[in-house]
Image (cartoon, rainbow, N blue to C red; front, side):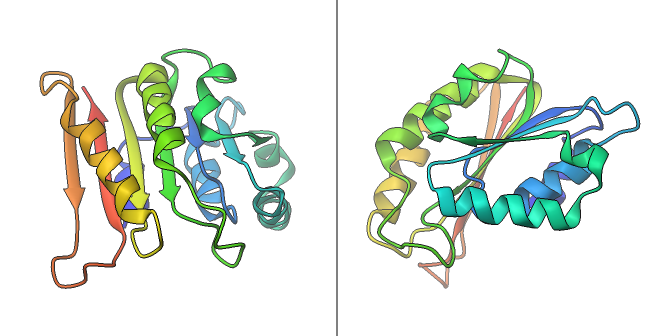
Length: 184
């Protein structure tokens, strides 16, 4: 569902960030959205887990042509430091999947503290008309606390510069929550 929203925001040649690349499926979708004939698009994909980066690398190797592969930068780093590697105010989309690596070690999770730093960093490098997209998985220890951190961050963004939406299933309390933060 969220990738449909991305397609209304992301343009060919854009710079985008997969802040928690996991197994690489969102990274792959992003490459397909930004790739153009002039090879100007760029996807920064980061994760703190080597398993995630290896999984993403394998998927991209199998799924992309050589020109598309050149558009991806896989980075072994915490999402809280994204502003250290990406030019300021040049990013159209920053996407997060908060929780743990599907099929990986469930004790390694995103944390409210680093997610808050990452959101602050994303806010600083996002261009007007850009989007911060978060899928917050709440069905694990720490998931609700991280959801509260995201909610508090979004609630404090100025209404004249941001449109903030939260999509949550009311009859499935443990279902992931989609949060979209549009910068005007």
